Image 1 (cartoon, one colour):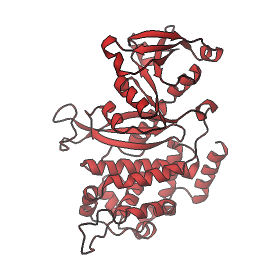
Image 2 (cartoon, rainbow, N blue to C red):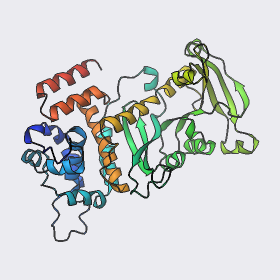
Image 3 (spheres, rainbow, N blue to C red):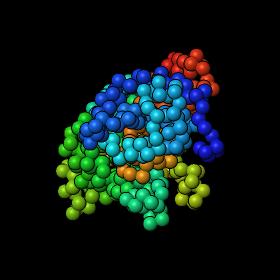
Image 4 (cartoon, helix red, strand yellow):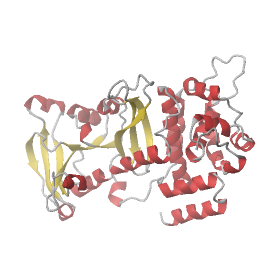
Length: 395
């Protein structure tokens, strides 16, 4: 149904008091973008704009910038969110005036309030913060000329995300054109005290060395045809054999000219696994065949079975990407500019953090649906609280 045919009613927007939990954090954004407004004529401020973006995330009736403009005309929205009636022009301008980097401090503070989720005990006693890293492509309109991808008619942006596995939420995102190198983006945003869990697309030995120099660690899948020189064979424990570990070795990675990219030997753990069902259908594997996953790491004192478990949890970021694009509606971009897309991305991360704070669990489709039913007036506060209490009991 198009926006022209459906006018958002007051009864379709409720439960806005849940946003009050974050209103204090957003207040610091109120003056952002007001440097040029010497006359004090600005009506829509950044904290109000972010509140409207969150409303867009949680209310499926809001499907576009125009529907968000309609929602800003509702008295209930104006009262509970403290936002004025916003014109379509002011919402479009907001994506260029309000610096997206101003939201990073809000995300960092809210992320600090999150408690770790229930996880296998070996993952909770590691020498760093488990952080899965990957990128996802979101298709864009041809008019977004900076979003280079396949050709002039096929444009796209890429979100490079760092995802804290134990908390179940993203903590950092960088927006680039789809053709940007994921390895270069990670290299520019390395932090100390993390264990970066990455797929084989990040297997650049110089990048792995930089992670070590940044006082962090890595668990990185390698290509099956990797080149190495064996230094030491480590014995396999019964626990390692039980999860399919077939080799645990110290090696020098790379051919002779590239061995200088890594200053010293690293550990390589090989795990046997069944091929994906798609590989079976294409003849690249079979039900009785197995393939190996080759994992490189600098964590020498962590058991091999735990290394395999760490890499298994890399898939949590793939689940988030599905949630981000298909559930939060971020396949539809509200802005064509890089800054506006970053604002929408950070608002999505904020939404995930809020769900985790409200429920004590990682964001899921069922919980998101329940919140949407509540925010649209189809579920009562009592029904939402019952759902949240059930989640907290099963945590």
